[in-house]
Length: 330
Ligand code: SAH
Ligand code: AVI
Image (cartoon, rainbow, N blue to C red; front, side, top):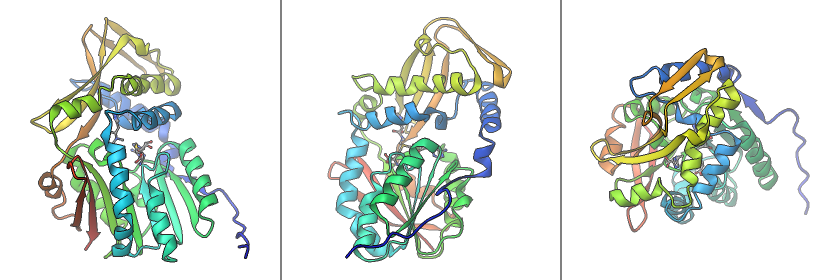
């Protein structure tokens, strides 16, 4: 029998108030970041259309074990996670191309639990495509998107209850570890007692493997890194030549994080008119563009203290490269 699709009106994607002020926020963040002793740019500005496509390409590089390892974990364990949490709403932060979420949607659908899906993502083009594709493939659910920042706009998800929140790919590692207690507190505030929060965590491992993952031989990560300068050129009218910069990514074993930087090949003077800035770098001068923190079970759970979330399951692959941490709202 044919299902008659429900007629839905209005735009399924909405922008948060903060997203409407994105340019002013970007200007303020770029000014603050570049004024630091080691100039830095927020890594969320790596992701315009080109940046998201480059990230997708990174996930297909042989050295980048994270995505395929997490996908393998999810294809084996998503059912059990859904069974344990019994959600009727699936929410995802930084959903990107929106593929991994399907493991959960399929498990919810087969139990007749799937009612709604909400994706919170900074890249509106990718978000619209994902919402449209998921709505087409899961017509029984109400699929909506929120264009926004998963740090400042988490509350836009609204109150929880029957919610399973996903934060995949190890993107939690792109937050500064000192910000995690606050971030987990904000996530707990959009969950009700019993709701689940599944977080993908890239694990501490041998340095050579980590180094290779962020220095792939095809040079895709290097292009992804340089893309942040193209984003500044497009949005703020800057005049960076990305080819003036080398890609640098190294593991800091003491801090247990990968740092991505851009290093000037020669003396660089770049103008950023919208921010009223001129940036001068000597040859060898660097801009930090991303942190990607690696955790152990202990260092990760240590960041959860007092936030209202408790670790319920820690699922890893046989080589202990990556973990899916199922947190439960108390
Ligand atoms: N979840 C996907 C994509 C991970 S890449 C996967 O597992 O493959 C990280 C995603 O988070 C990108 O789509 C990027 O656009 C988005 N993102 C990065 N910083 C963000 C922020 N501050 N707020 C919202 N989305 C962000
Ligand atoms: C999205 N995030 C988890 C990626 C990471 O590995 O930190 C982004 C990335 N940076 C370089 N390569 C991939």
